[in-house]
Image: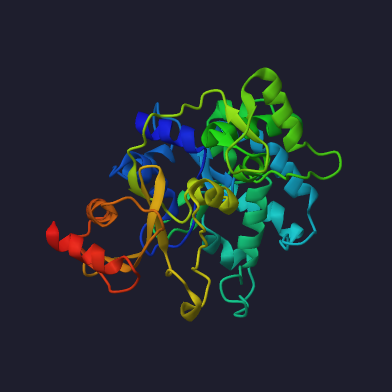
Length: 380
């Protein structure tokens, strides 16, 4: 658990996504940094037990993400901002239902939106598949954004379980003072800088989805950077090949060598900010989940392969749980990949399969790396 807490302390947040073709998104960044770990650790970190308060909670931190509970007070400025946007685009919940829905959560929670549909939702519209949320779901999501309810966990079907914050979060977190918007911006930029090591202002803004150009009267990312430069936490630096200004966190350390070998989720912080990934690794990455199959370049669920200090390849993976196989639907080599990349990738695929409880790795003949990867599997 201490290792998990240190890892989340470095990543800051774990993005949550419903796609389960391989493994849920929030499990993967921990695997990439910790290796094969017991996933029940993450369940424990998200729950409250005797003498073990909850460590992580979901909120809209980067996007929907697990974050340390001590960030809840820092996010209150965001909750207030969502409340101020009531009636604007994206907020279609019926305000007349809010008191009754909140009372039902308080009485019956934790509950899913489906648990409340009978009481608060009319017939669901079947148009716009995937976004035809019920009235109860719309109200619950709004109450979540403004901090009136919190996420207590997920059902086995990955449905959100809503409850009132006082039954989800530690009392000392709820009692913590609310920072000013400017103080909150400084804290979020500080954490983003710690996670990045070195970053541009755009990188620092994107990590917790702060506005690089704020609304009039709102906190400025550049102002927060200036505060941290003034305190010595950040140092202005130049990065070779970058035109933009960069900032180095005082705790960042440049290792003599990097011995990494791991697969990165499509939702890993390393590849969140695409221009940063391209600038640092010369690696252009796009998620193709929503691209029609005939237009995909690399595949449906493509994971970058980090080897040393380079992204050496990318593989389209699928967990065939019924047959207990890890399917490599496609494999592509990156320019400048180190020698031995096929063998190293095969070893990593075998390790990943074991963590997922799969018995076999099957390489399909798609992509320029597939033949060498198949040959590596035979040699091993």
